[in-house]
Length: 97
Image (cartoon, rainbow, N blue to C red; front, top):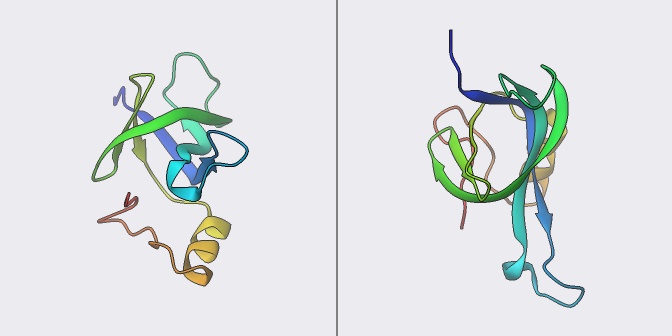
């Protein structure tokens, strides 16, 4: 049995550092349904701490947690397509600029 923390129906949320900060200074966090996390019920909706590293489908946050990304939220995928952002794929679910 896997002990990796998994996120399903995930999306990326951009959090501004301050009221007047430009987009490139935003913090990025994940939101989604978490599984195999000791602090949450299976399927509970969470927001992670800031994204620090992406290695394929494995994302490390500033809090030191590692999440394996499953299926992204369909509305997030649609938003990415419509707004010219990276569209999540199985090979490259998340791409940071």
